[in-house]
Amino acid sequence: MNIYKEQDSNKFKTYALMCGFLIFIIFVGWGFSYIYADPLILYIAVIFSIVMNITSFWYSDKIVLSLYKAQPVTNDSHPDLYNMTENIAITAGLPMPHLFVIPDTQPNAFATGRNPEHAAIAVTSGLLAVLDKTELEGVIAHEMAHIGNRDTLLQTVIVILVGFIALLADIFIRMQIFGGRDRDNKGGNVLMLIGIVLAILSPLVATLIQLAVSRKREFLADSTGALFTRYPEGLASALEKMSASPTPMKRASNATAHLFISNPFGQKSKKGIAHWFSTHPPVEERIAKLRGEVIAH
Image 1 (cartoon, helix red, strand yellow):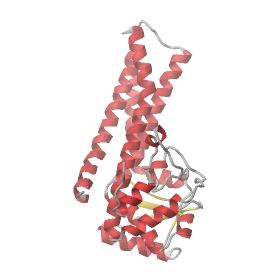
Image 2 (cartoon, helix red, strand yellow):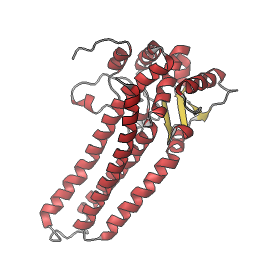
Image 3 (spheres, rainbow, N blue to C red):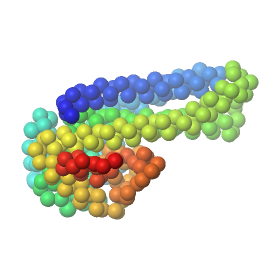
Image 4 (cartoon, helix red, strand yellow):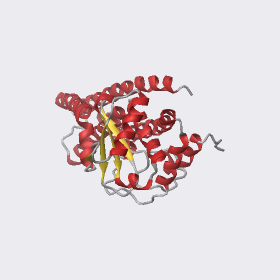
């Protein structure tokens, strides 16, 4: 795999997916406005989607860091972590990100920010407690890879847009339940049925896209991070230790689970259909790829 070609491809996919979501939201808003013969719904959908995109672009990092009560890190408070991150940033050719520590015993970490110049990496206190230097370097390099691959913007924007689609669906269903509709208006029952199906399926489709994108990018970040450190065993060993922690994070959330390097709900083996809905690829597969082992399917 050519890491640099994958990075360029991911940058294109990031903006293409953002545009696709915007078009989809406008289409959903148009459908609702057509069904209810009220153009105001379309105007609200367009304005709200633009406002949410602007908000997610400029303030997503602050929102997520605040959600997890992350505390800023300085060279004085955590010199080893700070110097390690600075060295990896230099190796990766990226600006030094802001560093934060999350007060949580589960070993985990995530990166956020709209671009490399406004990026942040947050690690839990549990991660600092259980990993040695080479393992911690592997984790920081993995998160730095997310920043370099422009994953952080996409991951946060998807959270916001998926939430907006779910909100539209909820509004539509409530309007169905509590009235305020004319079943004979512009298409009648057939159009109404299409609208209901759209409202039910759109959050599911959006979530599946979110999961597919997240899982693929975890593999790429693993590979890129290993390229930064030249020592893939460090990250592989770190993943082993993180996967051994069954305790979920205190503030684990489905909306932000895909941001973390490891499942914030704790590592439990998922098989069959449940595996499809996991925001993270199997840790055993990630470790095997890092160690160059062949996976038997």
